[in-house]
Amino acid sequence: MNLYLLPVVLSLAVFLSVALSQDLVSIQFKSDPVLVQTGTDAVFTVVTVFQVFSITWGYPGGVTPLGLWVGGSAVLNTVTQYQGRVTITATQLRISSAQLRDAGNYTVMVDPLPTTGLAQNTRSIQLRVFDAVDGVTMFVPSVALEGGNVSVRCTWTKGTETSVLWGKGGSALTSNSRVTIKGGDLVINPARREDAGLYSCTVSNLVSAQTASKTLTVYYGPDTPVLSKASPADCVVGADAVVGQTIRLTCVSDSLPPPLSPGNTTMNPWRLANWTVACSASRPSPPTRAANTSAWLAMPSRAPRRRRGRIWPSWAHASVQAQSQA
Image 1 (cartoon, rainbow, N blue to C red):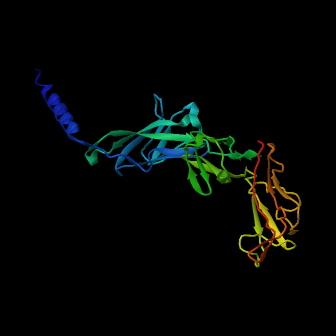
Image 2 (cartoon, rainbow, N blue to C red):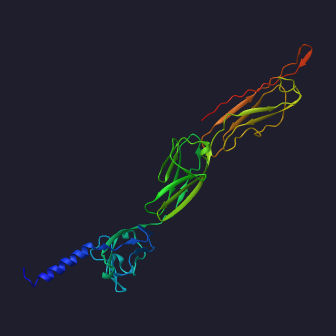
């Protein structure tokens, strides 16, 4: 070996030994990943040592860097996609008016001053860009019948990478044996009257959320009518009324819309005599499926009969029968 080259080789060996033994400069980010809406600013903030020679920023798929901070000022490269939207300061890269195509992994390379005894280091950071959710609307059927298939839909006009959360009466709603939820569609089959209520759907992504709500009405009935009677207080045990007395008959049938009956739902007082009173309940519109349920109260009159020296009054017997036509 040439003796003149020996000092150079030794110096290079010492330099490499020192360089390899150096710790890498620490690099952290204020937030990682960076999440932004389209049209807003994406800001990358690096946390590192104060004694920095340069900080260089790279973009996804880029061969040349976006720019760097060196000597107290920014040096920007011309990149068509980011033209006029990039700002670099001592510890930040700012991309204004973020676009969906800006998403990806960005890199930062920190080169510390030699006095720190630290070596150059590089880290990457992810940028995610979303369209904000907007235009959320819920649709419920105008006529939903008990026992049928009821579909509720939630739609939105804007938003990327969205998810949908359903609720009813302020509580979260999930799929079960009767309820099927798939994205913006909710199907109840078969529907029950207790399914009626205020429904909500919340469409969200990592940067925005919007909620819509609607009330679902489930039509049902008429149920089998229940016929009741109010007997006078002085009635003989086992009888409903004495001939000539007044008895009030009430016909009740649960239904939505409320059932229709001849006259009033609660029938007027009738005087006990030798005739029959009919009580009926039927489904009015808006439901399109017709149904009628009828119940009859038979009140035959008997001639008074004597037993053990006492006069037994005539009696009224109430019987309820029901017919339903789907």
